[in-house]
Length: 121
Image 1 (cartoon, rainbow, N blue to C red):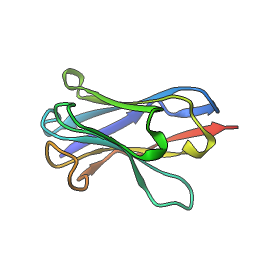
Image 2: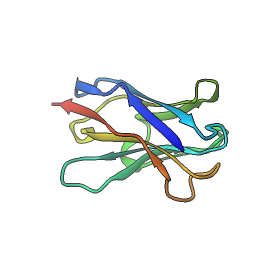
Image 3: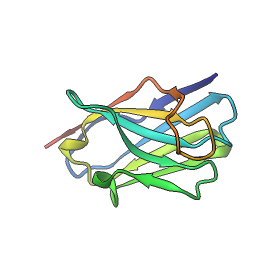
Image 4: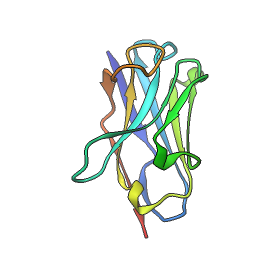
């Protein structure tokens, strides 16, 4: 079992920055790829960013490239999502997710409860 707990969401203005954190517990964090997903009202959940177990590989959806950075700290069992130059269209519930293996080639098998990020114009 893996438990994921997100923090750091909130209400910000367009152009602001925000960092989300996700602390994991349970199964080994070290050998699992991690990711951030988001779901806006009326939309399907989409992958925002993912990072491999050793941080050597990352993946971003096109709309956040150059603005968001995913990172992880294995000593703290924590994955981060730094978000800069936030836009109203970034408004969504953000979910932390854990993949079943070292790379993000499959679907996550564990999810956090989600955290709201709202960007006002």
